[in-house]
Image (cartoon, rainbow, N blue to C red; front, side, top):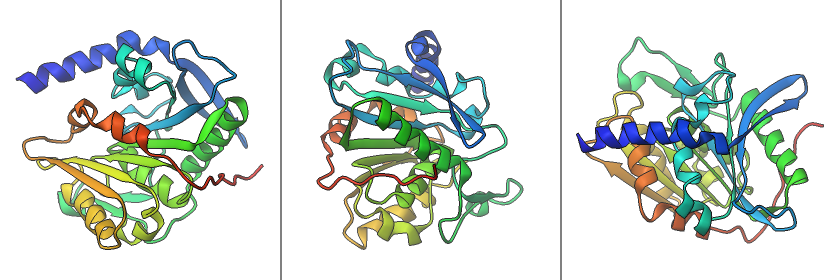
Length: 265
């Protein structure tokens, strides 16, 4: 019952205070990407700030430029967060007919066979426009290029694994929540500290997807953490975002060597 009320409160916060996120549209090669951006309190354009990109789940796809704020936005606009971690936070919105991750989905089979991840990293037009957005943001804001972060839940957790794999030297840390990926991508992920979260009762995305990614990374001594919630279903993002150590861990990660994303102009 306690978790139920937490979910309700979190959802109310997202819609009540989500207006602090400015609505924008990014255009790239004829495509458009709605996104919301939250600047630090008392933003100073002369200062340098970390960048955090948050990828939402499949249920929040669309073009209303609002639904992507349902989960998690309340945390980043809270007074304590903005006081302690001044950062530029961005929530892009995936189109209804698209998907953040290169994964084949079959909803008619068992949970174990529901998602099949690409064996290699194919062309992904949806992540390409997210990459172009990040390049655009770095040209228009003073981003701390040693402190770029990405996180996501469900479909966004899958997209997080893939986005980091596509850009193995770019992010300082990543947070895949109730997602998954191809364990063969582990060598591409091993330079980026990851903290993986999943509910063990998840009946939407099989928890083994996260476990397999974790063990593949542990085998090559990658900097990875895994937190499992034994009694939690798919909505493990509520538990993850409530972890008192999460933000301290995330914003303490820093890249020693800075690389840039190369996008088609």
